[in-house]
Image 1 (tube, rainbow, N blue to C red):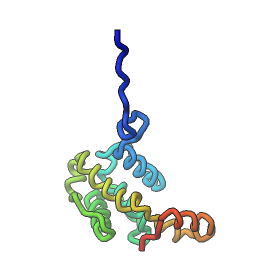
Image 2 (image 1 turned 90 degrees about the vertical axis):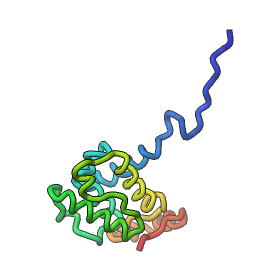
Image 3 (image 1 turned 135 degrees about the vertical axis):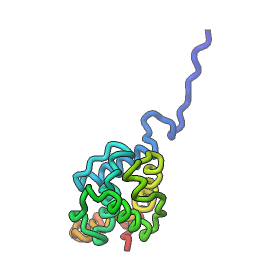
Image 4 (image 1 turned 90 degrees about the horizontal axis):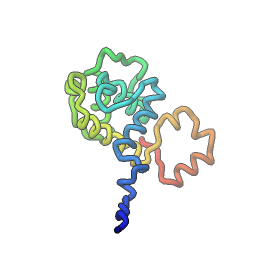
Length: 154
């Protein structure tokens, strides 16, 4: 009787290795939590546009007043975020009405992934780290981050 062959898992397929979708979802959750926005999926959580706005505002707090936004203005919120994202180098793949009326999972994953790739994966520090003075007060952290390749996004 031959023993069952062992199945080798590559690091990408390992049950313990998070998928890119999981990574992007966690990144979104972490940022949105700072804005009291709960992210649990790539559909209804994005429908009012506040999550998109939070992602942009986190890296560009000077761009707009987040506190002035209302969840009742979904299309305007989405259009604001995606228009600003375009200005920062992220292709606008969706329209506000599409997301507000029918939040299609794969489309939202694609749009949020492009934000992730621009801001997080490109190792851009959120401007709020500089504007709040948290990095200026900690020169060793600032030096370490810059040494590791992080940079300010102007």
